[in-house]
Image 1 (cartoon, rainbow, N blue to C red):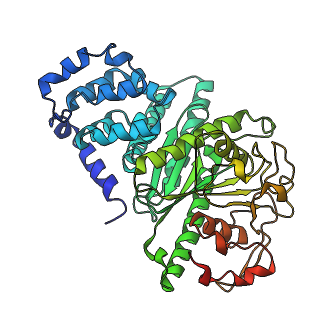
Image 2 (cartoon, rainbow, N blue to C red; image 1 turned 180 degrees about the vertical axis):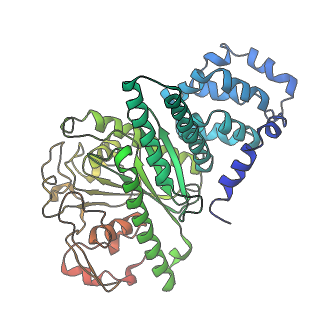
Length: 438
């Protein structure tokens, strides 16, 4: 089945909203005339409900009522993003909705559906692309209608950011498929673009950036980085298939995640933005795990610099567990050792020779210290005894994801649960062959 089949079906139905609304779907077992009586039995009118109660209320509406409520109560729906229900609650609610109701909500409230953790990503992609296009059109119209000079500067800046996101998504024919899995268009825009199918991938790797990686200037570069990781991982899986490994039919998705405001030189010394990054990352991964239900992927977090601090905070302080963690160029975090982290598998640390950030322990315990208990991941360059090729070194703070580097090779392997093949920069690397495959 083609990667884009789910999204295409959703888009085709959205293109015929009148047909969708005429279906008049109601909750299972309920008759259309029962809808309003169900609402009357609640303590609050639907427009004043929040969280899980609002979701439950929405599930009692037929499609015409859903569309009307979304159009007339945008602030009520917006509350779902301000104080979102838990991802598991969202996933459970979404799974009870008829398909037609899902499509109506995706069309009528795209910002909400696109950013509500627990909703499947095929719907979120369509919703976020719709919201992106609507926002571009609205801002363009405001500029064309004439505004003050300072307001025009703000609008152009936001338009430039949104256009960068649109460009990073590429064309509909782009391979691997790209999904716009989250989008915020406020004063400090955030976004996440996945390469591959998050609803089905066996391995999911989140790339978490550090300082100076904002959406406007770096979303394209970060998506290119995720694409490089995707290519590296799929290349390894093809190689494994050639030797009869059980990994032969596995698939991957890599996520270029800029889901928080990354710091600049003026605020990088504070943990305020790391706190927000922690919360956003936790919600993001919980959303994936909730939406996937019984079909859980192998989830890895590959975090750089200040982003590694946010990741350490999430895995030490929040109700979040992942399968693997790799930290590169890390200034430290709150965990005293790997035992304090909610990581089922291995934790790796990479440190480039000329990178001044590792070993600083600026934000807490240095994960590169031997007492921390993480595995060493070589980034110094060398020879790949499996692929029989020379690997480049990562020498500075921003070179860990470079094409052809030992660092990218190792990050790719960590993300597909092949930590035993990760090079450590010692003589034992010669023995890290395909014979070790899990």
